[in-house]
Structure formats: C-alpha cells, structure tokens
Length: 309
Image 1 (spheres, helix red, strand yellow):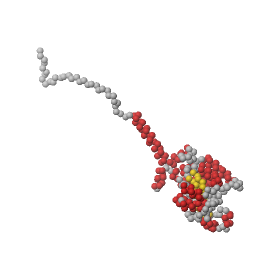
Image 2 (cartoon, rainbow, N blue to C red):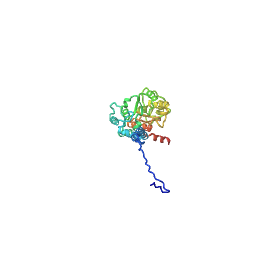
Image 3 (cartoon, rainbow, N blue to C red):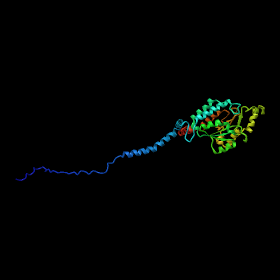
Image 4 (spheres, rainbow, N blue to C red):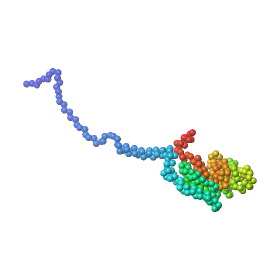
C-alpha cells in the first residue's frame, strides 16, 4: 500500500523547534544617578556659597546689622571698640556734682544740664558705628582739667589723642587724619599768628580786666584779637593754612573750642562752637562725628545711591 499523495495545492507543514539560549547575567550594574555622591557635591557647593551670600547680605544691610550687633554685644564692635555706657554715666554724675564745688580750688563749669548731657550718651549709642574708632585730637596745656570729659569720650569708643600745645598738635595732624579737634583758647608759650582765614569775633569781654583795659571798647578788643589772637584761634589759622582740605572749610568746621573763659561769647569761622559747658561739648562731638562719618551708618548700596543723586 503506497503513501498517499498530498492533495493538489497544499503545502506540507513542518515542525520547527527553536531553542533560545538564556543570556548570561552581567556583572556590571545598570547605569543611573549616584545619589549619595550627588548629595555630597551639593553640600560642598552650599558650604562655599552660603558664607558668601551671608557676607553680601551683611554688607548691603550694614546699618541694620551694626545696630543689631551693637545691641547684642553691649556696644562692642569688631576691632576692640566698645561703648561703655555705665562708665560714661558715672563720669557724668561726677561732673554734675562739681557744680556745687565752687570756691574749693576746682575749675568748675558755669552751667551743666545733666539731662542734656545724658542725651548725648543716648545719641552716641544710636549712632555708635560713626563714633567707634573716630580719631579726635584734644589740645590743652592742662589735660588734667578735662579728665572726666576725656574719659567719657573714650568710653564712647573714640580714639582720643592729647597734645599740650599747637606744635604737638600740628605734628600729630601730619601723621593722622583727625576727624575732629577739641582745643582750649589760652595756652602759655604758644606762638600766635594774625587771623586771615579763621577770623574770630567776641560778643562780650571774657572778663572785667579786659573790659577795663580796652575801656569797654569791644571793637578795639576784636581788632586786637585779629592781630594777636589767643592760642586756640591761632592754632585754627595754622591748621587751615597747612591742612586746607580738612580744616580750611569754614562751612564744615572740624574744631570745637572748649574754654573756661570765652564760652558762649565768641565765635570762629573755623570752629563749630565756642563753649565752656561739658554737656554742650559732648553733644557737639556726637553731632560732628555723626556728620563726618555718616557712611559708617549706611550700607554701601545706600552710599552709591546717595552719590548718584
């Protein structure tokens, strides 16, 4: 019996078995993000950026930062400057007591308003960055007379230097750019020069002896003052001649005259004020340093804006 022939038009079917060999496991890890390494890199970047950002923030907001720093450090700023409010207040109280010691061999001041003087301390604390490290020169042949006033200024954080006469004052002014000068009027052994840039004028005689000497002629006395002024006024003239940019501007004077005899009765074109009152002296010093060192109270951004206007 023979094999049956396939029917015409049909294709014989065949079975094909396909064997697929499984892939071998790879030893390499699949590609992806190394999270721990990425976090470490970000942390290092933040360590570099954050301090710079904080520094920029401080610089651009210096006025606020300085006030805040002053409040938490009790008046102490970087650089060793500190406003010792308690020590200054003690010296003010002692000055106040001296008003009742006339006739006991002490050089006392005619007037002293304790509240007004204390107001200078309040203002000084508010504008402390302008006072801290400010260079002030005090010229007086007898500095012991100003012991309490000098101490208060140092308690405010002011860098105070003392000169006994005009020669010493000029030598110091050649070395340092003083923000302010305090001077008395009468000093022995100081040479005088005629007043030109720094004219002075008296509204009254400093004492009865001078009034009698000039027959109560105030015009003659002022003429004599111009030709042969007291040491303090003569020093102002010398400063204006040698340091015209700093001490020659009569509209922005940098000299305060603190004198026992002529307070309130004289004026100088190169002086801010002529006073014999310690309360007025303290207020004048705070005002002057706030004006001349105002840039310590604002941020650099505000300085640029002010300069552009």
